[in-house]
Image (cartoon, rainbow over all chains, first blue to last red; front, side):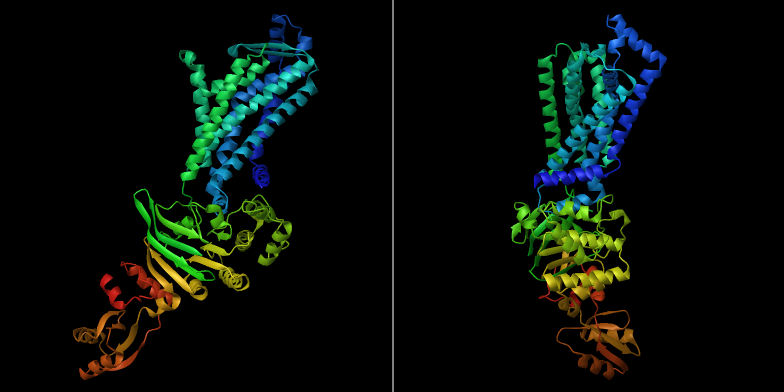
Length: 280
Length: 315
């Protein structure tokens, strides 16, 4: 019964055109990024210089895997929060606004269960979005770049990694998997606001604003000592899968904190939803 | 089937429903009347567990709506004023989604209900292509899928053309006749209520101002049509003689308890006023409803009929 309801929730979610907006824009951004790296003389040479400057052969490491990862790093910061919060903000508030939620609430189903189904649908969406992102990035970059090693340099996060063959692909897959948790956290934040009596657009805007405010504060030098208090800092955990070796204690700490944030967002949202009155 | 006891609902400092008592026995078509903002939709929202009551007890199908929500709503279907669906999905898919919130529903059952409401052939089209009438039928189908014993209809005729309203009326009667459903109908359309309901409750500013059989509300106002050569003088005389308690519209009088039309005629003729016509005024539901809307007193019931005198003091 629960799975049946979840399937129906996914049908609702994936039946809407706006759900595909995120997929479309992501793919567009990835394509543009890959094409600029291939044909843009400046970016192309700059990347090769960085590899060679670190003592690695650009011919081997300027590969499809390196390009797909570079694309991921660039787009995951801005586009991902935007599209998952768009979907998270819609999950409850859009149905409340349209009036379909009243029909659901006249059924013998608890409010908590309704929310749980909707939240899980949001999680599935996040997972599929990241999966599509990973697969498309790998496939499209392969059209323009040869197979080779993975070269990753993220100086602002203190991450540097060089990996060969299978290990490179493993890191790529693991980073995407953990990136799903970032997507889920932002989706949960927007979902939480969506449970209040506000418009779907407002839920999305408030959520994304909080993400950006947290990120800005986290990156402000004066707040450097407090970085661990910002949830955006922990959402960045996925980049550590490109570090060698992986700082597992840091990963474990951030994953636990993110799980706590997700639970908190869900509980606040469900409390707000539980005490709400639904009227036409 | 529906039982509300001392139910109250406040939205902030504003009282939306006040001390509402309502009993709807099984097998009845019960009308809930009142103008916009009277508290009908809030009351229905509370019956369906969508609005939390501030105080009071609500039992649906014998179960408390707050502590036994699932059991209370298991055999309930509901339709709201403007039927809304997932427009981008087909009617069939909408029915599947909505019915699965109650219980797994077989394709056979969905097909059966689709046929019953007359949507066969269009069930796989997207809802955005449906007319208002078809949406109403789809709303009815989703309400019927869990095989309800109680159907709550909140302004089901809203936005329908006269043909649609007629069809809706026939459907409600058919549901009552063929399935033996108990129906709670909230409506502005007095004519519909008059043709469908056996009992009604009238709400005004969150309070119930009438509750009883439809026949009682019609009998509750005993106005007499009086045509004379000088109506104002006749009224003055009859008031002086304490034979009437009220008058209105320049031709209607309310005869005082214990008096009869024969006393009125005798008195008028004795004072030289010509009486051309005296007859009981046929009271429509609309007349009674409008009278109730002027009345601000406590809720009378069908057993305690409203007297024109009561109304007169509150005008």
